[in-house]
Image (cartoon, rainbow, N blue to C red; front, top):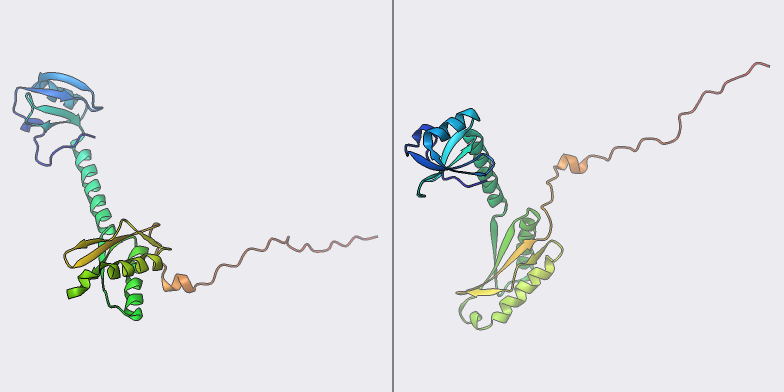
Length: 205
């Protein structure tokens, strides 16, 4: 569908004498008088919308404007939702980090990856540590190896100022959250496949 600016003229707001008209299916109708285009719109129960006011003559299109605006708003809402879902989280490590802190921070990275987020892993250098970038690379490779089952680096580590960065991206779709009640609920018993016992029939001699 052709994109239409949020600020545009519709129907009687279009004051020019002639326009270049595009039909409801995207077909080129050509240059016609605006009043004739309005008549066509009314006949088809559609709206006449100016989509390119800077053209000579301006370009208009026949469409259901209310439906178009609804679909546009739904698309914008979905795009915002996806942007939030793909939010890039950030976790910072020091060059001199002990195993406990490493495991704690790696656990945070894992949780973000499981939720479907990308994670920016940053190594912060202090003073002369910057002259040994291999120390930061070693930690980033350790992070990638620790989380290889759930995520993977998007590229090689890169330096920016006093920091070394690497983006980790999730490998699979985020896992659905399971409530404690669902997790603890026993599995339903399988239905019996054996035929129901039939009462014995007695025959009189």
